[in-house]
Amino acid sequence: MRYSSMLLHYLRASGRIPWKLQWPCAVGWFCEAMAMARRQHITIFTTASLPWMTGTAVNPLFRAAYLAKAGDWEVTLVVPWLSKGDQMLVYPNKMKFSGPAEQEGYVWRWLEERTGPLPRFNIIFYPGKFSTEKRSILPVGDITETISDEKADIAVLEEPEHLTWYHHGRRWKKKFRKVIGVVHTNYLEYVKREKNGYIQAFLLKHINSWVTDIYCHKVIRLSGATQEVPRSVICNVHGVNPKFIEIGKLKHQQISQREQSFFKGAYYIGKMVWSKGYTELLHLLQKHQKELSGLKMELYGSGEDSDEVKASAEKLNLDVRVYPGRDHADSIFHDYKVFINPSTTDVVCTTTAEALAMGKIVICANHPSNEFFKRFPNCHMYSTEKEFVRLTMKALSEEPIPLTEELRHELSWEAATERFVRVAEIAPATPAKQHPSTSQRFMYINPDELKKNMEEASAFFHNTISGFEAARCVFGAIPNSLQPDEQQCKELGWRPQGL
Image (cartoon, rainbow, N blue to C red):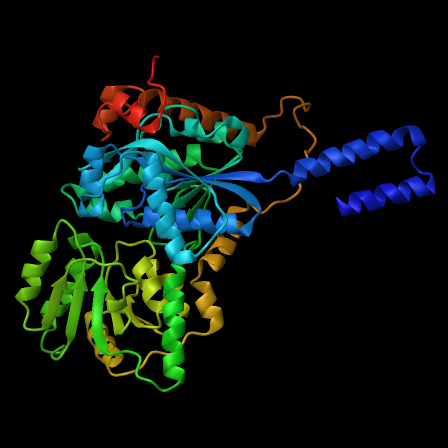
């Protein structure tokens, strides 16, 4: 705006613009500047919401908060609404909400307790249902309808494959100018552990690649542990709750004053299901009990396999104790020195990042999911079982290295937001110039147009089959999830379909 005004003033003074054209030029420049000044809308769609303490509830919430804090966009977070029956299955301590407004209030309180006051953004709900088979929430109906066309600038699909497996309705790329997918989950690794897992994984791999290709302009994979999909880039765009960084600063201060800062030994925290690292951990502890004699370790978690994990731990000749899950920021964890995490099913383990932010030593597998953490001196990776034993015993006998300010910043949500804006290519910028059309060349076939037409045909085919109830159920959709039912419409304040 400033440079346009200066140029106009110069051209007027020099007489290079006829007076009768000066006013139209000024209006043109003004309109262009106003269009540039309008802040774009970013809408973040995700597959879970607090109080379910899962990565796809927590990380998109922080992403929305810190994008709003950056101030360059209008931000909306779109989360699933569950009816009370599903709330009882998903939320801890049988927590229930009578309506979206009550749940939104809970989300805001939880966020502000961890970040302090932040610029407000919009939170809206779409209808969802919980799949006990998949242990996840699936959208009901066309969730693109939650956003008006006037605000459909940029969409961020947290778990794009999950949000589009059964999508039936407006095509995402038609509704939004740009669609960015963020892959959170290593679905193939989970599926491989099931019956006929490798056959299921083969099919799922191609389905994931297909739906992300037709619905996303670009996909961000948090690590190399995720499936490769078209137009994807690897970048960790997650940070940690600011509370963990504050805990780490306090520990750093204690160490610099030569105070004892870590009183406890080793621990692990994670959802207590075998696939979340407990299989690998208990195997290592059982096989190397003699070499690890003297190790004291606590496991914290709640989940479907809690009783089995506890029974297996009790059979060990080591002092391994099992406790219910807690918030990782709880003061009970502050004084542990070593965090042991052998999980290889995570994409980027949030608890590993939190432990490093708190100044702890981390023992983890040399695996693509942990690539981001290699730069941290307190992160020790093992490739063999013998190396696991050696690194664990060494960590228990030494003190952590204090984090530098640069490395501490790398773990923050401010840094994660900077990385996201960069790789998603959504920084506010001038509109791209239109290139001359090549359609006038005789018999010229534009490869981009050909690819676009093929993609649209593929999207049409997906939309068609996802509209048949029988086909949806064959591929694992929840029955009767093409449209929200009357109860969901009532709870959300929507008009029931057909009325």
